[in-house]
Length: 111
Length: 112
Image 1 (cartoon, each protein chain N blue to C red):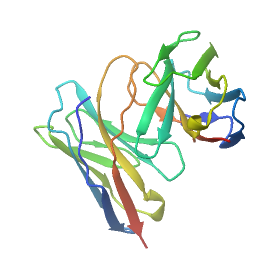
Image 2 (cartoon, chains in turn yellow, blue):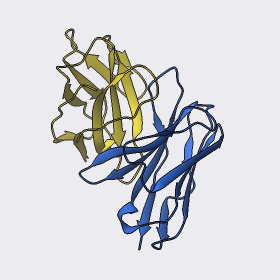
Image 3 (spheres, chains in turn brown, purple):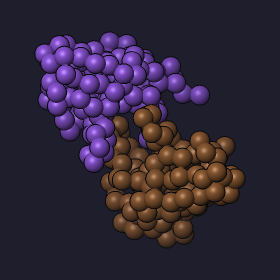
Image 4 (tube, each protein chain N blue to C red):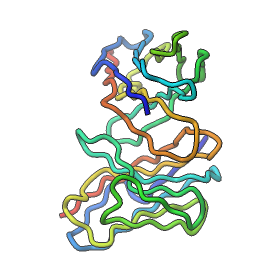
């Protein structure tokens, strides 16, 4: 899998949008961008994924640049429960394979 | 919603004991995974299964075995627990048509 780089930590005020960046400059054409998050002492939670178009679901929006070398996860109205480590990974769509998480971004939502 | 459940959130065992960790998913997913997560080491794959009675070794299978007798259930077995198996154990499942893995809440195992 291609490597990703993320800032180690970010703060966001409650109620504001949280924009989490991710660089994946070596991504290949058949690799998807996935975002997961992990709240302390819980299992990782799938958030969203995309190939090249922007995606939105009930949790977040994913903006992927045209060259696909970077992306941004947007939580439109962050709440205290969104405090977690957010992982951006690239995944080759194929047979079952393991997920490899990097260090992720610790997002802290402040009251 | 996909639901993946694990038999225990916290477990304390003694060295040498046989330990069973169970994982159940309710979405008819073909693929199931067992990971362990340790500080500074990230997620490491122990075993995975892509069908009933099928299993594949991951990166760190030593000291572990698995069982998948039914599609919805994937069990991880520590034949003789050791202190270096103290960890957070995470089960995940996915349908083979996507690469979206859904995780259980995790079992924090302490081996004394």
